[in-house]
Length: 129
Image 1 (cartoon, rainbow, N blue to C red):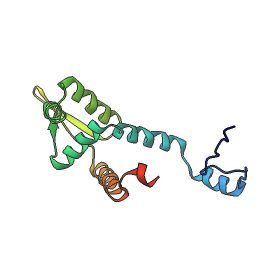
Image 2 (image 1 turned 135 degrees about the horizontal axis):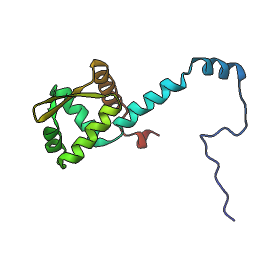
Image 3 (image 1 turned 90 degrees about the horizontal axis):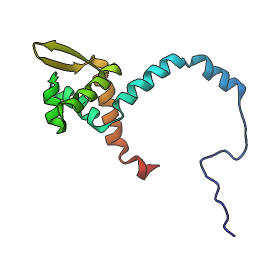
């Protein structure tokens, strides 16, 4: 008979601190968290992160530059850029027949820098658990 192992990272009993929960609940804005999750969802794809990193190096990229950088068709690059724009991470301007993308603002640069630094310091999350 095989014995089932209980996970070590789960409480074995239920113990809720109502005061703590009330303090937390009073400081959480669900709408803000929803918007923030959209921001992170926009970043949750390696090609999009590559575009963001490229925009930190060069202030603007046209859709064609992004496609060449990613080695994907222009339509795919455009889709990634649109996702980043919808997440509020980049802005665009049209100049003649070209569309140029840049970081939405300096705060976006800080978010990306913080994420890259965190990953550099943390290493492989699957190793550290």
